Amino acid sequence: AKDPLRVLVTGAAGQIGYALVPMIARGVMLGPDQPVILHMLDIPPAAEALNGVKMELVDAAFPLLKGVVASTDAVEACTGVNVAVMVGGFPRKEGMERKDVMSKNVSIYKSQASALEKHAAKDCKVLVVANPANTNALILKEFAPSIPEKNITCLTRLDHNRALGQISERLSVQVSDVKNVIIWGNHSSTQYPDVNHATVKTEGGEKPVRELVKDDEWLNSEFITTVQQRGAAIIKARKLSSALSAASSACDHIRDWVCGTSEGSWVSMGVYSDGSYNVPAGLIYSFPVTCRNGEWTIVQGLNIDDFSRKKLDLTAQELTEEKTLAYSCLS
Ligand code: NAI
Image: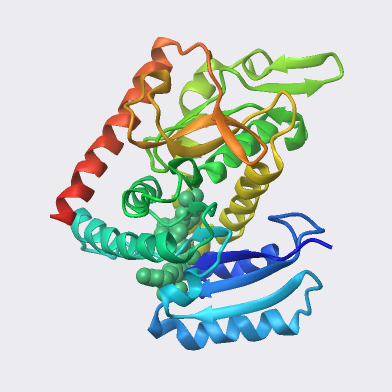
């Protein structure tokens, strides 16, 4: 039998946390033969709720779950973790300035980075979910210099999966037959959901999404805005964030990263830019990636048309501004 892996979930008493921890304990994230020990971190006002989640994890009697650490102490929660899913953060409240929200999150991610740096497993894989996800991940990277930069990522897989879902609904095909959409850039409304390389498996072989949809007008406008604004649409409908799909996508992100993507297909991940596709190096930016042996690689050589180029640049511009704002909160 495999040794258990330790998985940290911060913000574990929140909406996404509540959907995510049972998925991890059932093997959705790391596979059905991988035992896990869950480390859950939240802040003192949520300590009682966090303990309630721990009680439910015990009650659910998950065979793969070999232990639960529920803590409000970052050092205790980060110790020995192999995977860290960072869901905790400071939400934007009505009337708050962008800068104030950024400043709160910068200080949270700075201190949690230090705790991971000192106490997590050396090869710990980090996924930041909490918004602003890309910039929180960048701050985490800056303050955890001993964690390889390739190990620090943010979640855009939810946006990727939303794009697959929209194409599947539009064409009335199975979502599992659609592949190779791309989310470029920021996990925000400037992200660019790109279908120019996406295909659908049909009886007559793989066909480009553009050829099947036959409606460039829809693909270039409504499709893009629907994916960009899906989070807000869910909040409007549920009065709560998209916790179920965020949790499921976080599992997809880690599973593909650890276990590999399937031959001929890629996924979207927010990763540290090396300048590929003329995206400024040093941003955490969502790219198409393939994964093998626990490492991601940016898919190279895709053709970027003028329409796409503008959109890649726009979302990079926003991330550059966020980075500047985040750094101004540090000084
Ligand atoms: P929530 O408010 O229900 O839960 C957040 C939890 O984080 C709370 O339990 C809170 O006490 C905790 N928390 C706050 N500060 C903390 C700290 N310093 N350390 C540890 N825990 C802390 O929010 P929800 O709906 O679970 O969303 C969590 C985050 O995920 C939000 O930032 C949201 O914007 C983001 N999100 C990101 C998505 C993505 O695709 N990247 C999709 C959906 C949400």
